[in-house]
Amino acid sequence: MKNISIILLLTLTLSACNKTELIQSTATCIPSTEFTVNTSHPKGAKIQAVMDKYVAKGIPGMSILIHDNNGFWINSAGFADLENNIAMQPCHISKLGSITKMMIGTVMWQLVQEGKLDIEAPISQYIPDVAAKITNGKDIKVSMLLNHTSGVYDIARDLGYNLAVINDFTKSWTSDDILSYIGGKPATNAPGEAVNYSNSNTLLEGMIIEQITKQPHGDVLKARILTPLGMDNTIYYNYAAAFPTNILAQGYLDFNNNGGAIQNISKLNPGSANGYTGVYATVTDLYKFMNALLVEKTLTSPQNLDLILNSMRADDDATYQTSIGGIHREFMTTLPDSIKAYGHGGGDIGYSANLAYLPHNNTIFSATFNYGTNLPSVLGDEIKTLRKELILIMAE
Image (cartoon, rainbow, N blue to C red; front, side, top):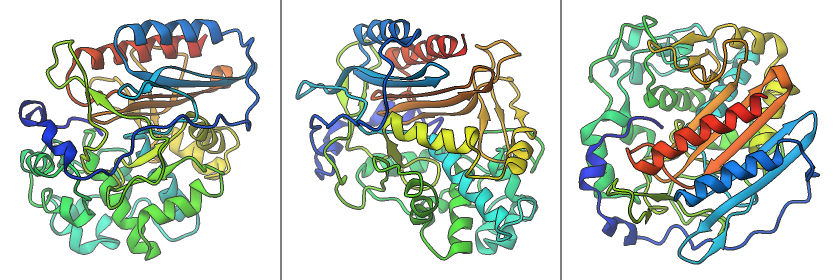
């Protein structure tokens, strides 16, 4: 989720953390034996050195997976729980932020393939009452939600919503709750005119999924993707009850943005489980999803996947491209034009993550960090640099 208002940084207080104990302290987890790690992987030492360098700079912890023609390399650095001195392990779960959007987009395309959804139909065909509340709603097509050309007002930028989040950081937000902050707000562009990233798009995708399937979109995500792929360490969580396991890494942020002490903000909910964020997973479960989506091509047909990847469209700054499948082309200002990295990045106030596939060298890269990048901070900037260093190694 991008662009949470700066008002959070100015007014957030840690007292909100203590309202309800929804997140437990982190326990040491049992390492998975499902994947054989190549301890002699030619990129392993270089990746580990980069990880250690950034932990030394103050990033709490991270886990990294690479799979290429040399097999798997999977490792961690730093801590999953600073307060209890629990070392980070690849089996620890972390919040993915906007990587959730790529999973929701995949569900949308499964419905397309089953003839239940027309990607070029107006959203009013599926959620007429909702479309009527949104500026230009009658002219927005389903595909425009997926590639962020709808112009729909971004909930993450709304001052009223962000103040409401601050007032109850443990609230379980429903789609209708959030929709009340979007209705009637100005559009960023005419439908289809330009790429303007908006978390609200995926909120609407979730509502369309629910209208078509008559089930909560989180249940549909689990039934169609998480369970079939054996993503047993992946959870779609909405703060309605306690987090169901104690192997969630704690999430951190430097509220003061002064390079000093960081704070544990694991219990703070900026609106999870509404399509645009809410999935928590391990790096190995992320591999399972990306391998099925872009390598084995079992989640969407190869023909539709080609259609999606050929629909890429850049934002005004040409920093990334987005598609009608929720898949992005990432790191465009870091990698040469000849190298493509398909996937999605993720950020939240206490966590961040990356998931990418590089076809030129058959590499899947997944990474989770238990530090937030959605509010400005010195360490957040370090993670942005770290991500660039890692993707350049992956692209070699």
